[in-house]
Structure formats: C-alpha cells, structure tokens
Image (cartoon, rainbow, N blue to C red; front, top):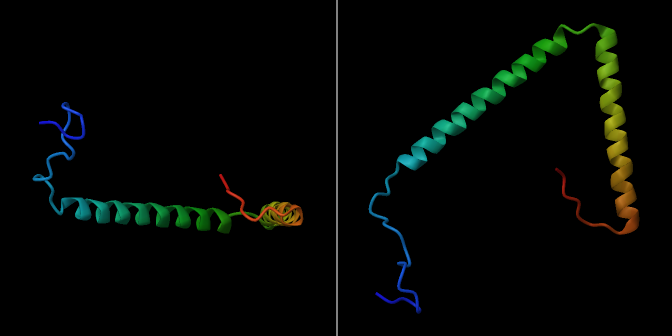
Length: 88
C-alpha cells in the first residue's frame, strides 16, 4: 500500500482498543494528587504551628525579602520594555 510515496507505514495506528478507562484512570490520578497536596499542606501547617515566634519571624522576613526582590526584578524588566517573563 503506497501512501504519499511511503510504502512502510500506515497513516494511523489501530484505534479499536480505545476505552473510557483512560478517563477513570485520570480522575484517580487527580484524586491521588489532591490527597498528596492536602497532606503536604497539613504537614506545613503543623510544622509552622510548632515553630517558636522567633522562627516564624525569621521565616516571614525571608519570605518578605524574596517577594521584594521579585518585585524589583519585575519592575526592572518593565522599565526595560520586557513584556513577558517565563518562570522556571
């Protein structure tokens, strides 16, 4: 069988083995991700609750510094005319 000059391949694979199982598997995966995210949030909440006030203050200070640095970088990019920034 010759298709567009190619004798070695067919244009499509076998589609007869498709089922709706993929959608069910995807929803199970999403439930697993949600429960994983929920457990992580609970761990972080517990960890923060057990911190001393000094540790909380230091953590918040670091977060404020990172946010401020990020704002400065964004303002610098805008000043230079950069309109789109891709994050890692």
